[in-house]
Length: 364
Image 1 (cartoon, rainbow, N blue to C red):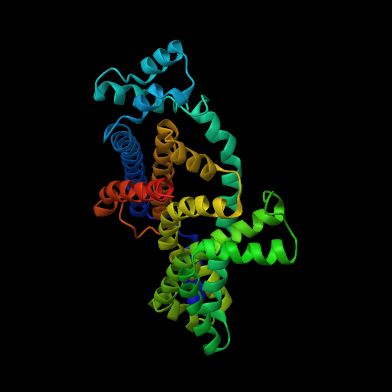
Image 2: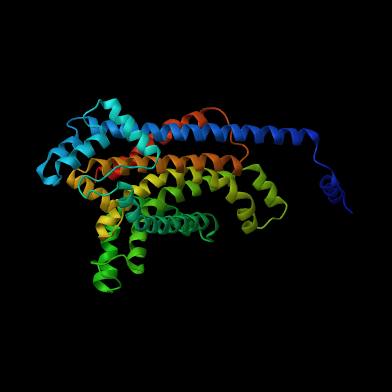
């Protein structure tokens, strides 16, 4: 047996040192405290998102709820108007209205549509499966594109081919999703007659809409993956692995993918906002049913409870996505610090990104 083999077998048979077990226990406790702190921050951000949404929509300028209730076009009898006035507390102070709305929001009551006289939660839940189907498919396609481009940028045999692959994300990022959608409609609906634009919710129509949504979203994700693969590929442990005869394929899968994916997970949470805003545009371009349709109708008719609920939920979804990314990242890379600016900065980042997604929904 060689000295190196003997050393390896001796190391493998030795029990875990007491100091390492203590360090693992300390890191586990620190992670639990970190996770608890991040969950509390996320709850605070979601509540703050609702409060800011309430003031922007319901308080600044004229009160849209009171205006809608007093409009003859609402078609409400006096008893219904009194019931809705008491429900929303429009005759009380602003803080009283906020307290009523926030209490309902925390209990899952999103209010009642002033236009359709239906619970907002029912309207959103009816449209949500269509949006989730589109968004989930687009997310899978964008991940597939990003992984293929990242792998090709490292493993393609020709240098010219690798350079070309690295330029593809910039091209994807420069093309708006509605342009891609119109091209796909022209090609697959009008030319190949694969789906009908009047009923685009079939499988082919959904795939085309998902591709239109996924192509621009995959660009930043693939750029982050490529950049981090380049960084990790220059590390000393990679040179050591190559010197020991490890093949490039095994080196890529065993040693490069995991550390390179940590920043991509954070980017993955960030693109959730882009996915939500892009889903609204894509649903309008393809004429699909979804939350985008509910939002568009709420903006068109001035249905404040629906508008407020969708914007607040958009912010909440993005905050939760960032929370998941912050909790998963330390598990993939133990080098990430569990204290400091990252934990505290998540509050501001989650709020800002969450309202960016909400603004994308509300501005269309």
